[in-house]
Length: 217
Image 1 (cartoon, rainbow, N blue to C red):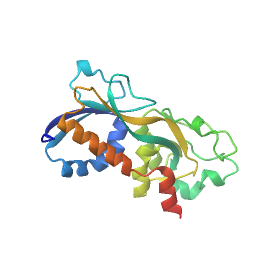
Image 2: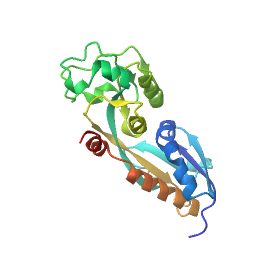
Image 3: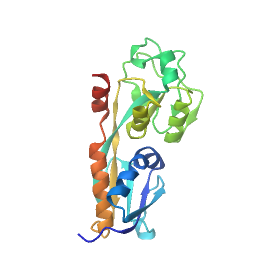
């Protein structure tokens, strides 16, 4: 393989970049010091014919037709709280009622997806609705309420103790993360190197059941 060097232009979700990619970038830089990745954040589909992007990482049910695609990792929804708030209200699994618990509403990850939880009551309406996933995590860490979150963006803060898993209910998402790129870019050495690194990092990322098993065994 040719030397993997140069600038790779990649589009990804801001939440994934902040909470999943960034904590791992030191390993990419150590392994491939010749590669410089220019990260751009967006939710919109990339028009590769009208942009300089070599690839993109998106959360979707399936990859777009006509693109090379790697299925990187599945996604799950979990309920999180700050340690202080958790000490006050405890696990949702152990309560007969959700009355009185401050609940944050996340537009991207709504409480409605947890209707099959062990909690017997319907999810109450919270005082705030937040449409940005990382902003929801920040509000939770400030102690403003319990909230649903994507596993991929909550796991690092759970490991660090900034968040607590507030329910052992784990809801699989119908979406997964994909790396996609035009076929013309798929074999570029720097793109191949980045794809390899993303696949390896995704494979090493613990699933929530595995994380729970290690934490509570």
